[in-house]
Length: 234
Image 1 (spheres, rainbow, N blue to C red):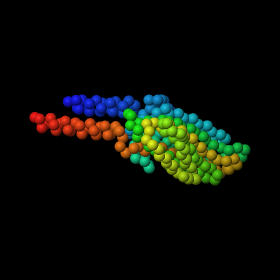
Image 2: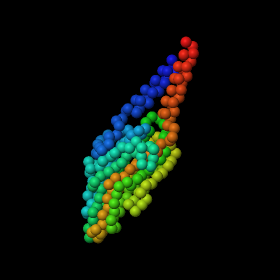
Image 3: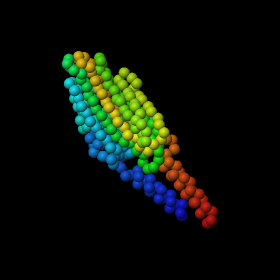
Image 4: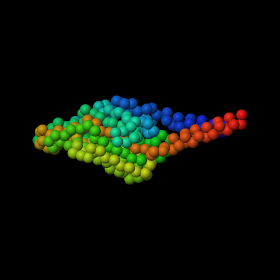
């Protein structure tokens, strides 16, 4: 009976950890994700929290409000088996430059990614420029810094001229801080230049054997062993 009790307690702890935050909602705005604060929301085995957003524009480029940026959670990323988010907006664009100055839209996104429970399972990140366009001297890029807990920041970069995806791996950790800078830019004087980012994706890879799964598996084996011994005694 002790084995069964311990197994039930273990499952209860895992279930309460997983249910402490809501599931991330697809199609919701960046403003709604920012409003979640440190409580965040979950995608698969990970907690996404502490979202922050800012945007500026110059000349023919305009700042993009958080209410016009949309997030779509994915449980299986384009290149990674782990969870991630697709960020999109119809307003991340510049359609020309003025004759006297550059035109641009510059937006920043930050958030934290954490494991549910004590497992150290986050071991990599992939940034993908998935839908974009550029003409003339226009350009669009996303520069990112991933900072695994206890480590220095690691840069990732995607650009309308390539590369269109960037990946980095690291020793498994509990938490990663993410900081992105989107720049959509047309240099001075290019009246026909344009640049746009419709969407980009961020995926996180996980260690193949999460500690939580191992604990559940061990509990199931112990429970089966106890059931077998009980049946033999009877």
